[in-house]
Length: 452
View 1: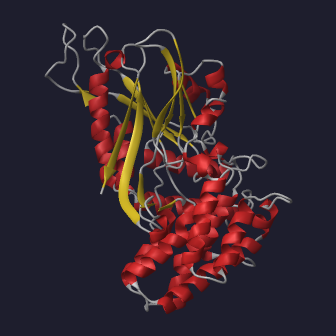
View 2 (view 1 turned 135 degrees about the vertical axis):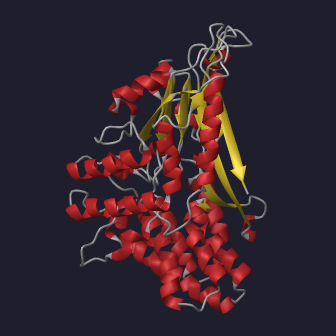
View 3 (view 1 turned 120 degrees about the vertical axis):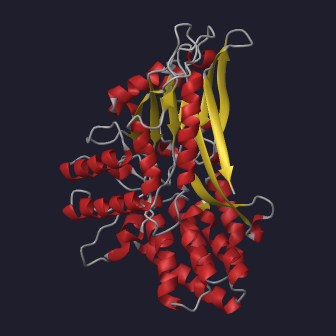
């Protein structure tokens, strides 16, 4: 039995809150049930599975959305996700942030350790008649594997200092990884690649196809533009507001601004700000002052060398889109840029709601070595039929699946988005694949739950 999940985004609490530990407890309970039912075979007999694999397929820990990176400025011991990873200050900062994430999510990580320590998944042994025995339960070995994405690519960086951080992650999360770089591609881990092949599955995080969050010229051991925007605008904005206004703002407004890193899509952040101002402040003067704070941060962001280097000559690219938002916001209200944000999202990012078309170009799809192509990253759980050969009702099919997310959301409502209405919820999705005659011959399951 192979279980895949992604995009949990466990943070250190300095920006938006992580998903509740209840989600992990629910997951452990569902995993117990799945292991039990997977032990029923195609012939109707009960033969307990001996082990299962859980793959954390990127963006599980989220060092990016931490304000701990912001305690230094240029001219000091300056460290940001995009600075030199070979600097000892870089690894030290990553270790500090990672440790804070572990501390903030103690209960959630304890559940993972219990899974890997064979304390959580216990199922009945089989009787001589190959039926469940009502006696003492027996443990199922659980192997937890970590792959990296665009928010946790740091754990892919080679080096002794990073090996030590990975060792701490292995201990905190009960991982079966070695301390060498956590894989970004399956080919980087033959053992994990073999696990996927047993189930005819191919998987990657999916950021590889996102030009905002992956730079193919730099590779996955370097930041992309999305990291810079996340750190220098989204992470900094609540801090800059608090520095500017102190205790003058309503506490509910301050708390809502800290949740800005949970906004989907990310370009809807100004809409969120404006909507929260209407809800908690109701003051045009206050809106104007907060807009100035936002504009100043965006101006500083656009002038950063790392951003200017990403601006492509003679192309309307992401940097130009962001610059257009800032320039318009400098001379008008948040309300006026709402239309522009919706337009830019449709023009430049509409295809990224679904990554299914990219699955059609994966070698594992083209050479028919994988029946299932799995991505994460988009936070948009979906199942898309790619191809099928053979006779109904059970042709030899190939399917794309997205593993969704485990995340707290404030999602922009699609009805009249200019009204800045957001829906809050917590969601979790995971995928389960079976081999041979596990689960009475079933091939896969996709489970998604939402907490309000």
